[in-house]
Length: 628
Image (tube, rainbow, N blue to C red; front, side, top):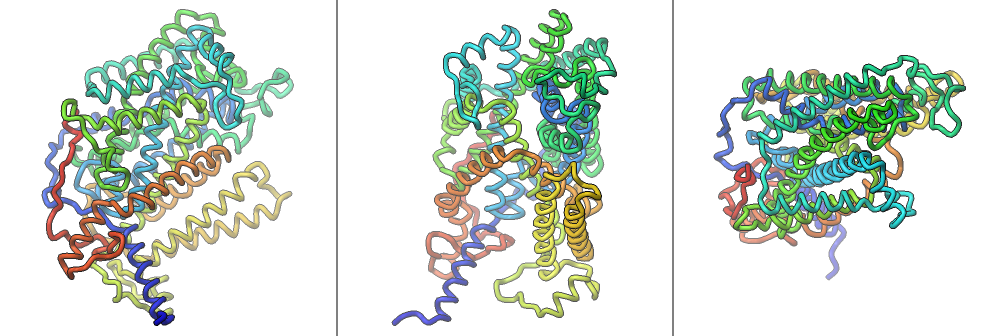
């Protein structure tokens, strides 16, 4: 007989519940992970040096000249300041996120343990993009410097032989970058390790080269280059309106979105909670200190470049060799270029080295193809993951120009940091006790009373937690709408455009309302090594700044990023959701409990992820730490 409407509804509810349970299932922590096994040896100086060394790279040698010429002019220093502030707030959120998981790891691990599988996949997929683009962009930047030493002969030869006439690709396939990345991938697959000594040597070279270029360029600074009049700009030059900010406020913000690339890497400090001395004090101090040092480096580089040479004459791919060649300082050009190539070489290794780790971790968890966890028994390296990631990075280095790569890396990283900030809010206001699928029912008056916390309650409940989650989603929608209005109208916010002002006023009022609702709800009292201050204000500011910078990027970047995300979700929903190790664990637990399994291996038992497994699944594992 045909199923009754009530049966159909019940089946639909059951299917939705199982599907939601699959998306939110959490990775179980091993019992022996409750306490750190690592020595707390990292001082404030060590943490600061780690942040600076992991961040100063391609941005120093390419970014300042590129943003000054294309987006911000001399106001590139303001763009770097905006990016630094956004990065600092994001890093504080990242630090609390890391502190909630008593184990060293990446944002992928933290989110899988504390938020759920789908969020973890999204962050992990974006981490893959970050490392792939990081490798591709550094390779492209390094070959740009090599090319500048031979008067662009390499790029001109390839451009003439194999031109690409496609708007969203590079003008020519950079086969030199492709070759460099594939050679590096082969070396890593063979078992070459990162060397701390070599990294320290090249970091010293990096700082020395920066110092030489600052001194040499500073001797040729002309403050008049910050106040060029429109009539003095040569015909055909992309000079905007001249002056300090030739492209206006919109140009400064568009530049800030690109400058965010220059601060990617600082988050490594937040992952050292197990090894840092006095992490409550030292982690936030190290984050702020390293970002100040990095900002000062970018400030100095940007000031020297734009004062020594007009912004519209900058070379977007190799600004310093171009500057010193223009000045006739050939010796300094060669010293700076060779130093930059050496520094970028170690940066290339540093950006590609973590990539197979992320692929291996996700493959081990079953949410991407498990073949990627195959380890060579001789070299103890994930060969397939290494070579596949190398091929992907090499292909992107060959097909996309440096500016496209920088934009893609910025948008992926900004999205990941937005998810981290939202996760911090959700976890801070999350109820600690377990909830079944049937014990959560409230009335409208109860909801209204809880919105203003009239009682007031001191501990989070499932109702207060749900209100926070909804408010955060509403806030994100309002922010996105505000950015959609604001970004195209940044230079038209005045009395002549009352509609723009009215729309922005309404959106800001709604965002403030969402903030007030969240701030009235009770927070948890879980003790962590570090907690973000001024919650919910700072995480919400992080969400706003990250989304705002994302909307500054062009439509081509959004299209490329959307394609990347679509590919990732296709893999997850056609493979990962059904082959997840955590899903298999829950299915096994369900069978043991009631002797039956859920369809397609997706089970809702323990979907809140808080219950401990009856037994730990033992499986072969590969520890990347053995490489180091």
